[in-house]
Every structure is written in C-alpha cells, then in structure tokens.
Length: 152
Image (cartoon, rainbow, N blue to C red; front, side, top):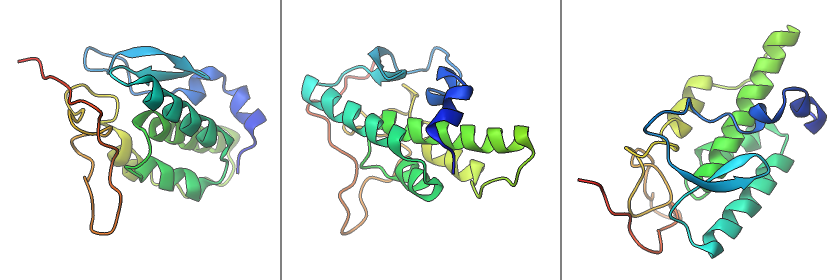
C-alpha cells in the first residue's frame, strides 16, 4: 500500500492523471483537491462528487481502489481519481523496482477509459455509455437530474 506522502512525491499530476486532454475531454467547471469537476451537474451533485473524491483520496487499499474504479454508482471524477491513484502506485513500484502490486492496468483502463470522453458520456446517467447500466439487484449509475442535449 502507498502512503499519502508517497503520492505527494509524484506531485499533483499523480492525483489528477486524466486521460490526455483533447477535444473529446469533458469540460470542467472547477477543481476539488486537484481533480477536475465535470460540467452539467447541480450544486447538490457537485457536493456529492466532492465527498466521493475526498473518500477516494483517503483510501490506500488497492483492492478497494479497484472496486471504486469499476463501480458505476461512484461519480466519474471519483472513479478517475481511483484509477489515477492505482496507476501512480503501479508506476512508483516500477520506478523503485519493488514488487509490482496486483493491478490489472488493462481492466482499469476498460473500467475508466471513457469516463472523461464527451463522445462516450451518457446523456441520462453520470457514467459512460460503455458502463453497464444496472444488473439485477444493484443500484446502477446515478441518473442525471436532466438529460444532456447532444450536439447534432
């Protein structure tokens, strides 16, 4: 496990490692603890996203971070933050030539790779169109207060 101080060694970029910025990135309306906050969210929703980011930043257990990154009930911003922490943990182990943690980076990319993409952004849920909506007996992603309009 990685102590929070080790993450600080990598700088703020390690905490907000978003996919490379390009024209497809979801616009942000601000930041919370170095993490971009996606647009088109109510103040109530932003407050929830901030709480989730705070929670993720306090978690250092790899298995729990992997679960959060894959869990569609968490906000995209929190899931991306969990993925960034996991990539930082993995990269730090590689740099220090220590035993690599059991992090499936391909699975992590599959769970979070589309969460900062306008093309794959769900117009009805706070999730990606590539995320599973709801399995029987589960909550599924949070529904948007109002659907996004698609540019056409």
